[in-house]
Length: 221
Length: 257
Image 1 (cartoon, rainbow over the protein chains, first blue to last red):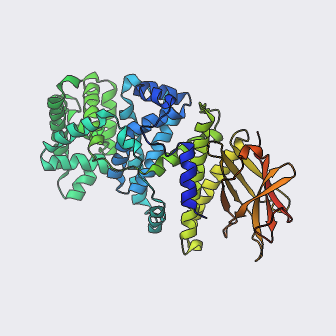
Image 2: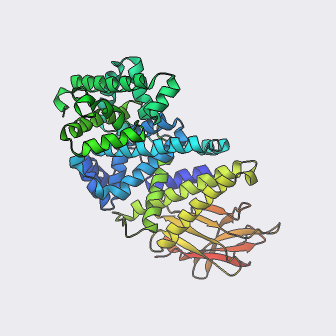
Image 3: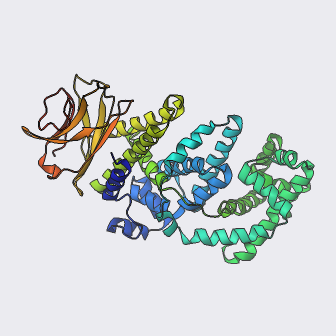
């Protein structure tokens, strides 16, 4: 039995392996819609609308989750869970309160930090990683080709802004944001006085805001 | 700006960074939240601070996303819809889209089976088996909840009462995938054979390989159009190349529409 060959064939026949450029009319129409319109359609049960959103933001969400949990396999689970929640809660999304990307990344952040804390309380069995390694398959090229242009732009701007911060201020911001640590935990980890950590965090945020504003004056506020 | 609202003026400006980063101790958190209830100035500072902190999500460099994640997501979407149809009814535009999701469920399951079969110490991997069984349930649930469509449920006979599964049909390529679990172990010399059925006519579609767990799958690409057949049958045969079924039937499915 040539399982992999047969699976690939049936996958190709179903359109699952369709290259990003070879989309049908329905998908092409959906690709022209903005995020808010796609979220509305997702709330009405349109799977392909969610797939377009996935193509635009899965790469950013996945990289974000990997950064937090450190394990790409666990990050993959978080990515799926985040989009599943988008699917389930699309009707509750309010565009006026923020962008879809912010909403998705906020969901991803919460899930990843929760996973990190769960793991600290209850370490996983190491052999699970080996099992999933076996399952590793090909890369999803659609999320590379169709990623929203604003994602790459924002990535560049934020990386430039954070690079302007003194290393110690950046460190406390990143420990809190990507590791979910409190100021007290950061102080213990770095063996620094709590007051020092508080000051660095406050100044770090202030400088980050200034650096971002300097780069994006037209979008401030 | 956070720097403009000082704590000693009764505001909580010096705690806002830690507040939006969820890095405060419980006592400080309560203090900030109480203050925010009545202070528009600090509320605005929180919104500004959160906007900046949220952008840190874009800091990590891109990572290649496994295609498997998309397949599993699609499978979960349909499993979720099947379990709570009133919460999020699925309205797919085409049968092909629906089929794609079904195949995604099968892919996830089949890849997992394949990996399990490649493991040397199956008995020790209880957690993995549980996951596989959950996926099997997802597929079975999916199939059983949608008898109308291109995934057709396989019905067992009294000879294999625990057998369950489905056949996934892809008319665009005249292909089908048979997946079944719960088949009894056969004595040496016997095999499960899949038949394509057209009235009284039976075409041997091949031997169904079955693992130690009673699970099997067979990919069918018949020379004749699948649409000419009304169903499939699975029987126990002593000869894999039999031209007509002689053994005990264990399962069957209707594939004609």
